[in-house]
Length: 109
Image (cartoon, rainbow, N blue to C red; front, side, top):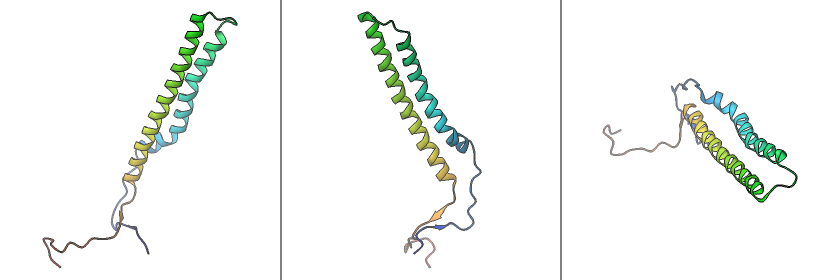
């Protein structure tokens, strides 16, 4: 049983920027994740061995900001990936599922 058949005579839309963006998404995800982590690590490495309570608070704040930036970035990349996937699927070939006969159509059979 062939559930989905390609629509005869349908022409695929030409590819646009979606494939370029799809290929760049892993790099965008990686660099957007590494950048806040590297900044937070640099902040910790630059901290003195015996930080004052105010310096400890600022280190903890940097950790929270970095974690928030990473989670926000992952959310944005996931949203972008879903949008790109939808565009790729919509530009692909058209398929016909089970036909539904309309008995009250304008042109009766």
